[in-house]
Amino acid sequence: MSSLSYFFIALIVLWIVILLSIRRKIAKIVSDAQVESVDKLSPGDRKQVKKLNFVLFVSFCGIVSLMIIGFFIHQMG
Image (cartoon, rainbow, N blue to C red; front, side, top):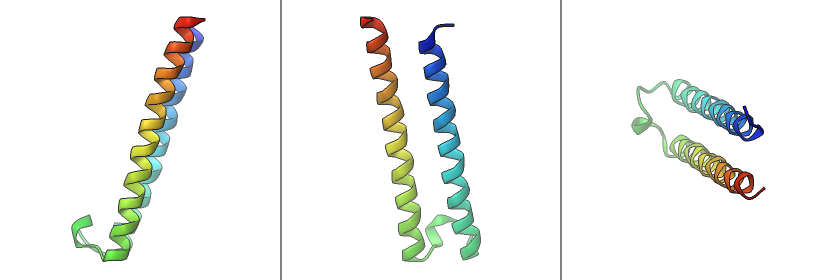
């Protein structure tokens, strides 16, 4: 396998770790509030969940952009 494949695999593993940790934090917020779903959270907790979801989205966009940049660098070099 080329170094680009290892780079992509590392990025995917990194994003999975970020995904799991953020989902665990959201589940902890929901369980601490003792509600069944995110819809029934207090406004403060809901704001925290929205912030974590935004971090998750930004990390996904960043990793995809790194993959695209890595692919183009690999093609040029």
